[in-house]
Structure formats: C-alpha cells, structure tokens
Amino acid sequence: MNLDLKTLWKSLPDLTKKNVSDEFINIQKWWNDHNYGYRIWDRVIAFGTTTNDNAVPRVVGEYISSYISTPTNFPATTVIGDLTSITLTAGDWDISLIMDVTGNATGTEAGCWISTTSGNSSTGQNVGDNTATTPTLSTAAADASLVVPSWRASISSTTTYYFKYQAVYSIGTPQARGRISARRVR
Image 1 (cartoon, rainbow, N blue to C red):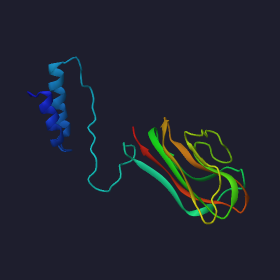
Image 2 (cartoon, rainbow, N blue to C red):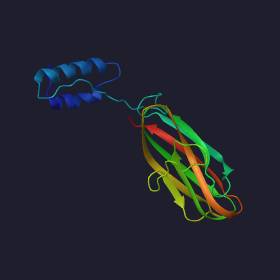
Image 3 (cartoon, rainbow, N blue to C red):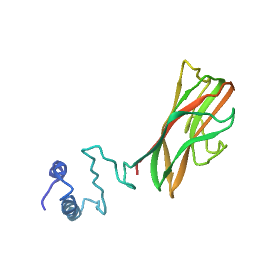
C-alpha cells in the first residue's frame, strides 16, 4: 500500500463499519513499514449515530439518567435526603444534576449535590465542584433552579451516585424535582 499522510487523511471519511478493520490493518502496516519513529499498536475509530438510538452499555457515549418529575417534599429542615440515584459501571463519566425548587416555604438555603454516600450525610460534598446552592428558598410564585454541570467521576467498579438535596426553612415545606444523569466519556 503506497499512501502518504495527505491521502490517508482524505480516505478516512470513506471508511465504513464494513471495511474499517481491513482498511485499518492496511494503514497500520503502511505506517509501520515507513517507520517514522512511531508505531501503531492499537487505535479506535469511533462512529457516531445517524439516528436517535442510544450507545450500548459500556461504550463511550452511554447515557444513564433518573428524573423525578413530581415535586417531592424536602426532608425536615437541615436534614439531607436522596431525591434519586443512578448506578454507573467502571469508567470515566461526566455526571450532571439539575434541581427545581418550588413550594410555599420560607427559608435561608437550598442545595443539591452529587455523592456516593446515601442518607443524611454530606460526605463528598464540595461547594463549587459538585454542589449548587441558593441563598434563599423560592416562594409559591417563584421557582429556583440549581445546576451542577458536568462533574467528572473516574471509577474502577460499579458505583451508585445519589442526587442529594437539603434545605434550611422555617415556614412551609419546600419541594424539589430534578434529574441526575451521566454520560460515559472514556
């Protein structure tokens, strides 16, 4: 096979699932034969989707989520609760969380975060990293939304991540609804 890098680059869009492995072996052989000081031992050529299907489990792009659509009462004031959770297998994940706080309540703070510890525990809570807080609670006339965008988790075994939520309030009971989701990035 007599290819230069420019020709190689131009040929990449023509590769299909059917011929990618044979074509890659030819490219690998050509590159190694020319020995530019680099050896190709293994490469992954990733294909996107042209439809609305999901990535299969354990593959880059896999998506897992849990969404609570019905407003759910916060635990008692200052008590930490678990709104929902997701279980992830080993790998690198970007986890995000969004919470909508609603209800007729008066208070000083509401917060949400991502944690591997369940129950009334703030273990793993890092403000500015995997936590979002608001200084006041919403009233019946105004909701508040809190977001934890793309927090990285690199795990070596199956792990459950909890959507933690807490509020400090004195009148009424605030409610929350929201989603925790994760996308496998590696």
